[in-house]
Image 1 (cartoon, rainbow, N blue to C red):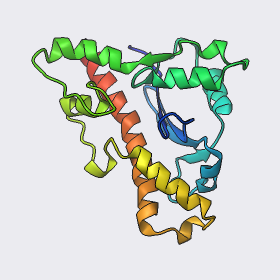
Image 2 (cartoon, rainbow, N blue to C red):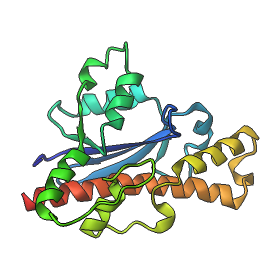
Image 3 (cartoon, rainbow, N blue to C red):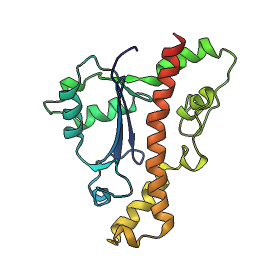
Image 4 (cartoon, rainbow, N blue to C red):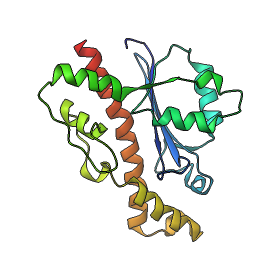
Length: 209
């Protein structure tokens, strides 16, 4: 895991639907960049945004093509679980990119589970509804990475649904109720913490190796 460049990705979307957007954190020894790319067509009216400079509209093909062209095949790309790899396999099926991204994503949860068994042998992970036992937020608690409650897990689906309903009204973002604007801001922050929190976990594992 000692590489000068590491990439962390995290999809956000409703269950059993294509992802609405993806967070991409790219880190080298000296720099880091974080962008969130909107993939769902309806949501693309929300980018670019003066409030959220990291927000862009994109396609999965263009995003992954850019990553592939700028980094070697040995550059580690992490996601929390195998979900991101499964989604990428589906989205790239039948395209020229498919082979380049086959088995490309490292499941950070698998690495973290092995680490936790050694580092915290007495720790009991709690089983959560719909998300299983080894959730990212529980590992973040282990390493002391603080995520504000409003940016935590378990609210993504309902927030996306409410935002999607507002988009369908065709009202400009400036005219949205503050509560729905807040849903969007909190959702973006949640995704950001997923990416940076995953990096913190990988760094903690690397530091204890």
